Image (tube, rainbow, N blue to C red; front, side):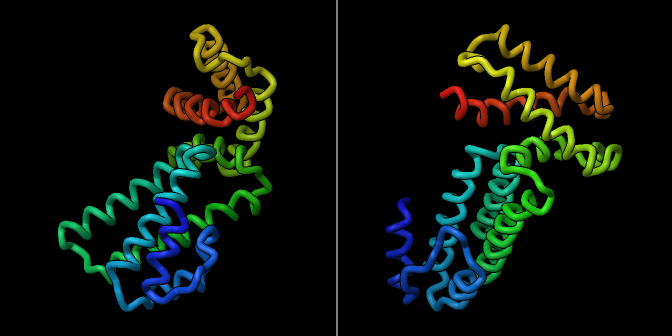
Length: 203
């Protein structure tokens, strides 16, 4: 749904063209206070879906986690486990977490691309426990640099090029002592993440 249609839903509900792109606290408060809860719910759901779709172009792990949370809330609402008011609260919390995730990278001194690789490595909590955030941050930076400088135009189509990338990722993880028992899964996630990001470079 186009953002103009979302704004129309909100106008009907008496909210005048808010800046929906940043899901500001003021906007979320207004949505939470809306009389027509079903409209508030629809608008929020569509906004969050749009935000998740745009993040899936840069951050696979994050968009998957947010998408799962949204689907779980919607399922519980449809099953009658939570009321519209509770559902709106859950979606507002989700929106706030999305906003916080955006600033987390800046606070860590990582670019959006590095954050994506960091999250691919940190998806497994035991890897975070074993290595600590700082080391994962360093690996994320090196992964991005190395993958960028070794990318070929057709790497995501040619198996030999993909295999080279896999070896490269494996070597970097081993160099920094990423837990070997978790490495295979991390390599898969990193490569899936790389495919999204590097398509921008080679596309």
